[in-house]
Length: 395
Ligand SMILES: Cc1ncc(COP(=O)(O)O)c(C=O)c1O
Image 1 (cartoon, helix red, strand yellow):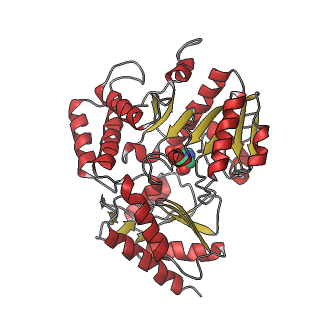
Image 2 (cartoon, protein in one colour):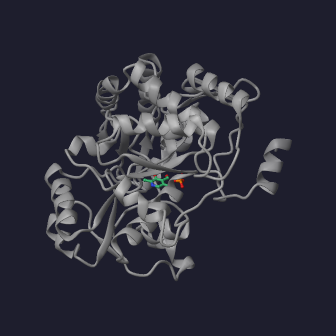
Image 3 (cartoon, protein in one colour):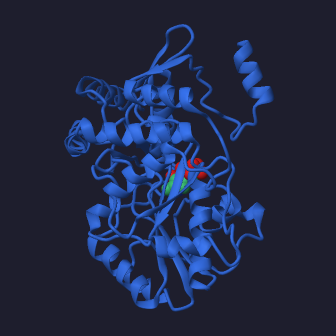
């Protein structure tokens, strides 16, 4: 065991007894590098974060520039700072008209917490509706609206008044009522194994929320910032949420989240009593500078237009009798096998052989891939060939 490994296992909290545990010294483009020059292709983008790969020169330049101006100056919401201002303007410009006011936080779970509080405050109601299979984060509120019972059990009591429906089941939408403050839903369920809802369902969900005055919160923490070929996956469905949650890829590799709504809704947190939601680091100027550069780069490099063809290429290359199903939107993939054992074997061998993918929390017989949007065709083909080679070695 190396000294670094020893410190990692002894002095950093472990989330599982079996961390991947590879050592990273450097990262560039789609590749991570170990201290002895080991190479790993990041086919999962650090779980849908590094949508521009690692160390994109424009993102680094924006960070350097902001570091030279100033770091943290004050808690969120007090001072006028050009970096969060610019990010808000950039975001609002790519969003529907009703999503015009951004509350910046530090993570995905925090954006869910803020959105739930905002919905309760704005509607004066308490019931939250969520979906079986949902994952919204690990803090108490986000956990309360997540579906994985095994992960929740030890932490009860959680938030009261949360009801769960089956995802993509239109006939259950009548349970959303005038008691409902908000429906919180991943536009495409991620940790349940990339579950893609029907167009008609998403439109009916939007309509039902509008009918009964419940706010629709779309969790696009994993699906946003180009992952599915649109800025946000809801654009595929011709709908718009009342509150949008984003994080992960937003910060271009720095920690940043946001919940975004119409100003008339967001103002509910401003008064009566004021300070309805507060955060020290939300909207950190360096993270916001990285985020603006990320959005601008995705736009300038025309990456959204390339996502579908890259996704289709991967899907075509990964045809194999052991792969039972591929679920995909853009570059957001679940690869299904017959058994969880096959998945375990494939994912761990891939890591040993320099290709990084990952498991799902709630879908043991699939593994996930979500490569950087700007991955080269050469790297993408190498990855698919490697996956097939390893599948061919299975018993
Ligand atoms: C859909 C979704 N929502 C919320 C979260 C929580 O985000 P964070 O880990 O930044 O708190 C995640 C993280 O994986 C996610 O995938």
